[in-house]
Amino acid sequence: MSDKPIYVTQPFLPPLEEFTGYLEQIWKNKTLTNGGPFHQQLEKALCDYLGVEHIALFNNGTIALITALQALEIKGEVITTPYSFVATAHSLLWNGIEPIFVDVDPNTLNLDPLKIEAAITPKTSAIMPVHCYGHPCDVDAIQEIAERHNLKVIYDAAHAFGVQCDCGSVLKHGDLSVLSFHATKVFNTFEGGAIVCPDAETKHYIDQLKNFGFVDEVTVDIAGINGKMSEINAAFGLVQLKHIDAALEERKKVDLQYRSLLKDIKGIRCLEGSGEKFSNYSYFPILVEEEYPITRDELYKKLKDNGIFARRYFYPLISEFPMYKDLHSSVPSNLLVASDAAKKVLCLPIYPGLMSEDQERVVAVLRSPFSR
Image (cartoon, rainbow, N blue to C red):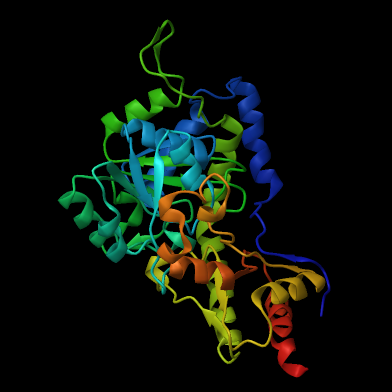
């Protein structure tokens, strides 16, 4: 069995020769950014693939989140999850908005709709749920609450590329959905992101916001930001898109094999899958329960000592970082499920190209504490 390092994720890289033709065309076009031809092609191709009507590309998902909040003029307080990557809450702080953390569902680790309503105050202006690990939130319940209280909904859909729900693309839900195309994501453009917009007018406004607020060469009428995606990133996305279905199929096989290999290991719990239609297999989280012979952190170190680099994702909770820990909604007693999950979670390696024998090597380490 190989002893090569196994990382929690590996960016999918298509054959280099497929990318070089695009690079040559960029040099010929002499257009490197500012909505060039490949940028426009990628927006259209993504709309077609994802089943949405309007997409605004960005240089990364964090700037896209910040801009989405600006576009909807969100102020005051926003209800969100502590169980996410820090960019979710950071985007609120950068807009002068107070995050209000609410606990998560124990089965999905998504924002728990049953906890949202109690957190609403006169200052609440929006809800920002996260489709954690690419598993869809309870979008209908969240929308019902939002409509009853006149709140906006912005989905952090960083993990949810290509994910479906009963009515089609999960990205159609909420007022806006924000994607990340970072190198570790299912679909990547090296660095990148996007906002899924409900109509052409919203997309036009967001496109203006991401380009400093320019109307024309001499007119700026809103305080925008520089969020534009370069032609090189867009070209890489076009190449990636040609291989995305094969990549998703490989991820599915890895997911299914893990579930088979892990099913009889006491104290290791796999999160419930969303089903083939509703998942993009972007991560493979397990929860290390009390019945397991060693702690989660001991298992993490044991894997690392064997050249297997898993990730405690998400740990610590966002609410435990210095800029958030003093918020009234950050007290651990308010976030019991999220706190418990953060102490137990471990994301195992999953990516296209992960060999069956590599998975067996990972699982052999998980079994090893029982052989003492």
